[in-house]
Amino acid sequence: MLDLMTGNAAAAKAAMLARVEVIAAYPITPQTSISEKLAEMVANGEMNAKYIKVESEHSAMAALIGASYIGARTFTATSSQGLALMHEMLFWASGARRPIVMPVVSRALGPPWNIWTDHMDVMGERDTGWMQLFCENNQETLDLILMAYRVAEDKDIMLPAMIIEDGFILSHTFEKVDVPAIEEIDFYLHPFNPDVKVNFRKPRRYGSLVMPDWAMEFRYNNALAMEKAKKKWVEAGIAFKKAFGRDYSSLVELYRCEDADVALIVAGSAAGTAKVSADRMRERGRKVGVAKLRAFRPFPTEEVMRLGEGVRTIGVFDRSYTFAQGGAIYGEVRNALYPMASDVRVKGYIGGLGGRDITEAEFEKMFEDLLAIAKSGSMSKDVEWVALKDGSYRW
Amino acid sequence: MIEIRFHGRGGQGAVVASELLARAAVMNRLHAAAFPFFGVERRGAPVTAFCRIDLKPIRTHSEIYFPDYVVVLDPDLVSMTNVLQGLKPDGALLINSAKESCDLQHVKWNKVATVDATSIAIKYGLGSENSPIVNTAIIGAFSKICPQVPLESVIESILKASPGDKKANAEAAKEAFETVKGVW
Image 1 (cartoon, rainbow over the protein chains, first blue to last red):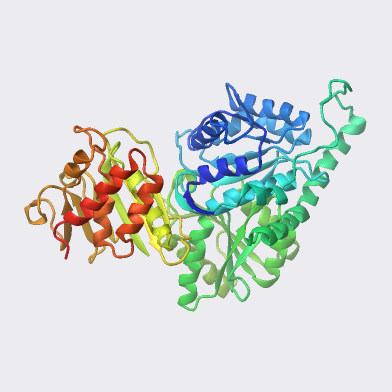
Image 2 (image 1 turned 120 degrees about the vertical axis):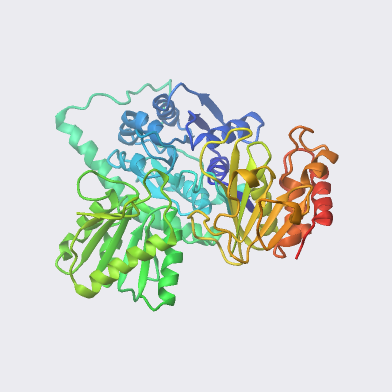
């Protein structure tokens, strides 16, 4: 059924459609309307779930880890400082192989105090062993949460997933969303039924001390599961397309990249704006494309390399900064393309921090810059901050 | 693509107006997106909200700088803020005011329509007399100046998603549609 809803309403709706059984959440701007909507749906009987009110995000994640051990399908949502407070428990969730699904309504970390979107919060958790997927619009928020349960609860995977929707730009914007019937979802997403559940009649130990002779093998298994998740997301995307018609069958969505001279890699809501900008460039005869990065963890190394085989000048737009060389995505892309480094040039752009608006015109400037690099074959600077008050800075 | 900016005060319903208008466009088989100015809202403080309507899916997620329409829910805002900022040269302005456009001193613009949404809202018991909620009346009037969103879709949208008494809100929209002045 077609409806008009905010990204946060879409996230709450997805939890309902997935028949989530335990929710533990703590409010934080701009996530709050997700936890409010879920509380409302549990209170009025629309959802048959247990809603645990907790005193912090750290406790929310701890509660869900316990509930997941029992065999319950679990859900929470957070943003920014709340996600940072969860940090310790994020490792616990992935190490204990709990398939918790959590929308992260991305928001800058303070100071300076700021409630608007950027990706510093999620990139700060990139090494916690969680899967991380970015949404371009509210439809994707709804769809990716449903897909996330299917992948996360797969017996070969058993990893938690963050579904990232940009704060305000998606969370508080009303968009057209096609909402599947819950009965259709039941065919796509089966109940969570892990091999091992806490059973008081058959006591076991969970989260015990593991000595150096085995700890590394546990970590290696996590790494293997993350690697396998690439294929599982593609499979979940193919099945989703069959059931609902919308295509998520790749970890990187290529837009007008086939014959492109340059391509810009973008994650999240800015990908839509970049596509509009690419269309305008194409009208002027500029051969540019957009590669929308859907998955950041697992990182689609192979798909990025395939892009690099066809397009030799690649830009990466990051809404984060690593305080090393450019943004988080830029680092991964350069890493993936290193084997063909002599042929491919990768330029990093930092923008949209703390909710700074990213316009079509700004993307057009990035495309022009990339085209100049492609033409001259050389690049004076590797990373540039775009749309700063007194012009761009490069080094 | 049509881009619309609403000016109101916290509590008047500018954000809901943008949502209901987007919903009306979607009911008319168009694509739409609606969003508030991203920030903190306080009752009584000036607020802005935005709406995009298009034949094609809306992919851009940037803010709106050059609207085709500006809708003002509180006439006092006209002297306080530059409601005309960025309005396209052939764009139109709709103001909630009992006056006719020629009597509005602060507005120098070609296409100006006015509607007494405050009186209409009070008549139908929307909000209170001191702080009437004018959003449904104003989008009823808006449908008169924006052919892409017919009154029937606006009424349908209000009956589905308006807070409060849906029928009274729909009546208010209809009356505003019929009484809007200065349509070019």
